[in-house]
Amino acid sequence: MSEVKNTKNQAAQAEDILREPSGEQKESGTGGKKEDCDRNIRYRGNVYQETLGQLSVPLKDDITVMWKDGKAREQEVPMPGFGKWRDPADFIIRHTYDIWDDKGMGKIYDHYKHNALVHTSDGVTYGRDQVIANSVMKLAGYPDIKDYIDDVIWASDGNGGFHTSMRWTWIGHNTGHTIYGPPTGRKVVVWGVANCYVKGDRVVEEWVVYNEISLIRQLGYNPMKVLEATANKGGSAKADTGTWGEIERLNGEFAPDKFGDNNGRYSDIEYFIRKSYHEIYNRRMFNQFKDNYAPDYRYHGPSDRELVGRGDFLQDQLNLFQAFPNLAMQVEDVYYLYDEKRDEYRCATRWNIIGTHEGFGIYGPATGAHVVISGISQHIIKDGMFREEWSIYDEFALMRKLAQKRMAMKDNTDGAGNDDGLKA
Image 1 (tube, rainbow, N blue to C red):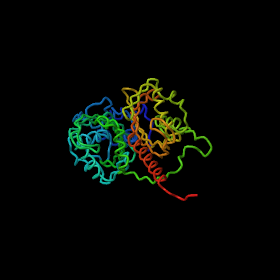
Image 2 (spheres, rainbow, N blue to C red):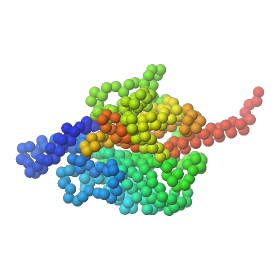
Image 3 (cartoon, rainbow, N blue to C red):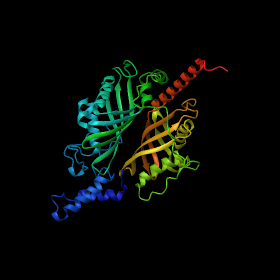
């Protein structure tokens, strides 16, 4: 995805542009140049969101807090084919309200493309009818569900589409059946992140990750017992052939490549994120935690992890390396918004970790299972350092994968014990 660097100069330039009279009020001799410049600043870059009408909710505003009617239309972001929406955040927040808080499940027909792809820890579902079916099942389990939007980060793809990253918290009471069992009556508070690619007023593709272990605990279940009950049921949308290729992190017997100089390929912020991830996770340069993370770093992670300080965060990440010694990091997507008032960047990064469970640690004895851990992180970057992070991957799905491998190993062992074989 092509990006341009976000700077205060761009914000000021955009503000100056927006203060100019509209094209209809200007003389015809300069209208075309102004329109081109306006499109370049507002449409291609991730610029000062207040100037461009960005609907940002980093302070956990209620989803029902919407745009006020009559807001100056010049503060909208050009969105060809998007109809009434003021900007990508407006589109995401309003359609989330329509579907969940207002219980208008049929609105999915309006907001999702007919062949939309949705990526979850269980695999990929195809088509908006499946989106509706899954949503109705969730609503049946928690009929009083209410969604709160904690933040929406977005960026244009420069070709009429937008990438969005919505961090949300939903609250509800379990008064209906769920995949875990009959109603418990318990109140649950669950957070997660949904990244979307939106084009032509429709969600084309979506990646959803949420805190499943936390949900199971809040329902009153023991996650380990649920794991035992579900590990042998299958039903995953992900195909597993039982074979896999080499994890390409090393260059044969040589060290992993350095990330290299930027040379204009990325904006400064995207380069900082991609290089940090590569140096830490692929080159094992753990000293980068000290260089790139603030001493009072705050981390909000899966399974209700709440960490303070880069030392605790380093230990948490080392646990992954201990369990998956050959792990490799692949960064799939990066975009961000500059927050003028706080002088900081709000960033969204979608990533995959590939590894083999060859070590011991928090996930138990080694199983040899090959895993792909898909996650989404939202960061606050200020003064050249990571300051805070909300990072989520489905740890329950990971544990289920390892449990399935253990069951397969046990079955193979039992089978070998019952095999008479050839006797000498």
